[in-house]
Length: 266
Ligand SMILES: C[S@@+](CC[C@H](N)C(=O)[O-])C[C@H]1O[C@@H](n2cnc3c(N)ncnc32)[C@H](O)[C@@H]1O
Image 1 (cartoon, rainbow, N blue to C red):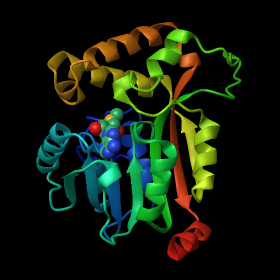
Image 2: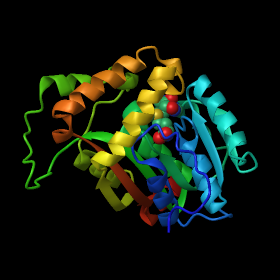
Image 3: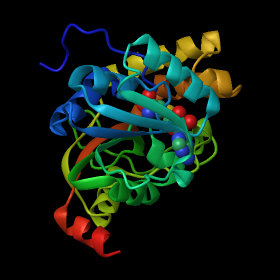
Image 4: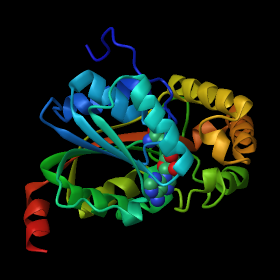
């Protein structure tokens, strides 16, 4: 069973929530002897929950000073300050100082913020052979041919505009599709173990949490005055038809041995 009777940090800033973080930890075979690197940690929910559940050590970092402060408070509140360290640093400046990790977790679209290739290359250099990369991101859907939806490649302009660089929470990267992420993973030396699209329930829970933050000007809404507007705009897109075109993709991948040999020879 993934969830036990511990009290987990529910302040997840991405739709996967506690269960999917724990699923990644389970597939990554985390335990007391393993180390996790949490990229773009936000509230530090992933690190807190992984350390609570598996006893692993986590190093979490984020580029935003306010989030780092919030994350440090959360780590203390959940009593895992002996296992989780938070640092203020953008990915572009992070140095491992020779440390190697068993898992890199990048939930909540960090790939769209820094670029997927950049994130995967970074992760490749941080992981041990066979180490696990777990990430989630918003994607433009493709290949979804259920009875209900037949993919219309002609994505409405309003949706394209909302998710393009600089609009959605200032993300720098272009929105990609599932197979673009898969291809980039492969090129970077990762073997995909599992991937899936999140259900509408996951999104509802996430949007409720974000709406609460927007109302109270807390969490991600504290830093970004535009945040509430973004959340409301997203709400209105989703009330209409965004779910036909936009999805949240969760991926768990292993670093292959071949790529490890390549890293050593670089
Ligand atoms: C949507 S939030 C996800 C937070 C957390 N991982 C979660 O799922 O709850 C994206 C996070 O990425 C961080 N971020 C964006 N660009 C970054 C960068 N270049 N380096 C480190 N963190 C970054 C943001 O500050 C934000 O906290």
